[in-house]
Image 1: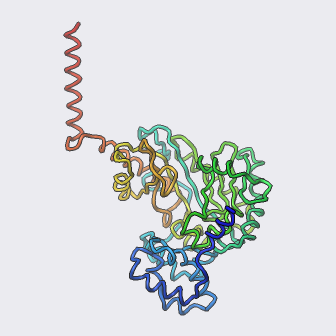
Image 2: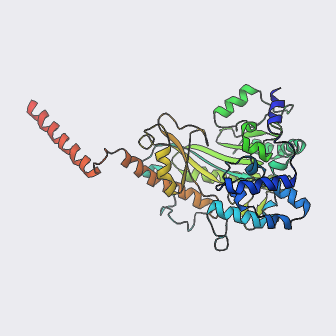
Image 3: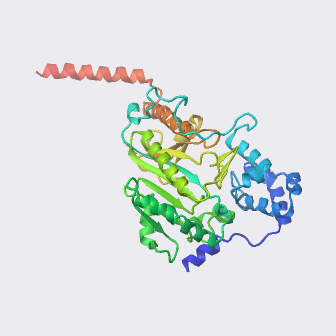
Length: 413
């Protein structure tokens, strides 16, 4: 019954004709100024497409059309959608990522050489900033060339992709560098885990949540057929995992508690290289836009580098509002401990990451995280000072107290 309910929820609205969809989109233009897909839609461009491409194009906009509060409002459905519908996606990418693609071009590069703001020794050590070991996570997305993207996959294709990836996961398991196991939530799969174990992995931030509860993914078709074709590879040390069948075919991530950002970044690079080499047919890339992802917000690198950091002063009111105000000009995003739309920790712990994914290299993203944390730490310390009292005054006050205490203790002897 639960599976049937999930499938029904992911089925989307009843069939709507193309003309009805276009009519809805045009009406939404006035109502939804922040919905990028709706605002980018051009009726003349649409009319110039062949009937088949019109249907395929409108499918990309289903999520934004059905969810008026969407910001991006669209998802790619096929690995080549960004090139087939380039006039639309180019404008949408420029709006979201705030770049001029006539001037700037995306380049993938994991090499730190020449990256602005990199410490002289090339080591991104948070201990240098006076921070303790933090929970660090770096992830990227990949989609296989030989399958449609998740929004347009059939149930059988989801199952087939899981079977295709078995060879890759087995190679990782046999490699002593990684080891571990693969778990599946596909009913009948040989590595199937029950609801209890699945929830334990979700609670430990190893496995992803039930996608059928997400209205945006439901409208796009990404969560359809839940939980078929979904699973997770987990390394022996649980520091390297691969989500299968979430928003992208693969979400590859490495996590570690420590202070050296280079270490977790280097491990991810090695893991990505191994995985891509083993995938028959390779992973989808666009010659101009880089790594192809379902959501245009992630295209380019598909990368998110983050740390969990305590900000008790900036989060003194129990929310991340002040932290977001400080982080936005620094190019950082703030989330709760469990990710987007989750609460912050009771001790003021939040998830911090650079916002940029596109027209920035992988090495630049991790360096931007280090630089952002340095500035954020200064803002956190400043927020802890008594209001209206400059730090130098606080320092003098403490010095006076220390002298008075020393004098008192001497008088007692």
